[in-house]
Length: 201
Image (cartoon, helix red, strand yellow):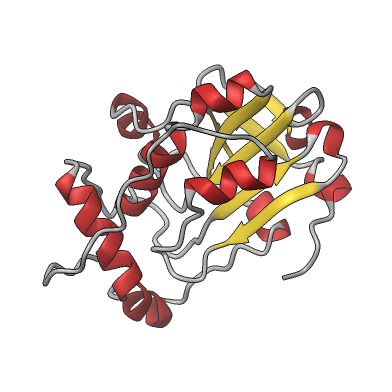
């Protein structure tokens, strides 16, 4: 995976999902380290489950002066996502999806999406999400992938750069705390077992 150009990435503008204020991405890591979770879509069932998972780290991150931020590629589904309380960090929108491009988050084609969405990784997470009562929908851009970056305070370096290959890919909590060099008592959700349910969400 290509190295992240933090100088270029940091100039991208995001819109605060609550206030509507525009901020430069680099402002998020100016005074503290930051975990930035890039969602595929706010209605994505896997993204919602992953948001709940990473939110388990919120207090440990705060105790170690690390911000937790979520970024969506569009506003479609934002209110439902907020109302569902899936994510405990600050939320932003990248309408131009420029940070997604700069981070190498691919776009699926209509042809490649279906096999990926029907794959074992997605079915595993969907089974877990269903068990926890987390639902999704098909609203918005179905073709965008997401990922995660963890940036050290002041933009000194990239501690983790993860881009989804399958829509079911995510960063385990243990990898996040390891990248930051901190500990957590949060319990990661068990990796779900496959069943016959198939979902393209």
